[in-house]
Image (cartoon, rainbow, N blue to C red; front, side, top):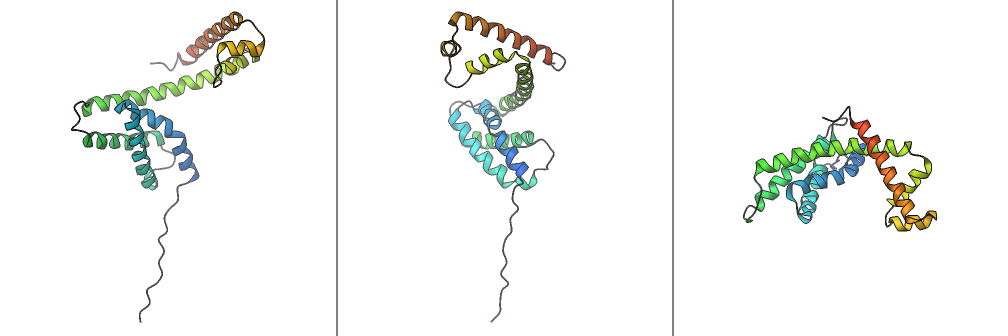
Length: 182
């Protein structure tokens, strides 16, 4: 009777950094895919397939490199696979057009990140009461009328304040982005 050694397969586990990068990338990844297929249901399906591939290849990701670029590349391949499966459809975009859209969407994401960072900095420079007014206005479910009631001011006065604050934020963001805008 021969005895076979008990061998256990040990699989690597994603690092905490990888899991965080993966989690933070989901919205951008979805929007990147959506820009190429235009149907949210299809984009969700492709995102799920992309996530499966990302998880299966996590060991290939090199820490310290650009996770978004790496995951976008995987998504692009998944979009191509999806389109190949759907070729029989009457309407589809050429691979070249989808590549152009993917590149544009990626560059737009970078620009949006810069704008978001500039807006956050500009929000911090507002007077506390102006910042609070804007934060209340853009809180989920709030509208101008509700904010006016909350602060006990006439609605016209609050709308004028919104206009002034938006203009201030727009000018601040524009100044911050001026050196980096192409």
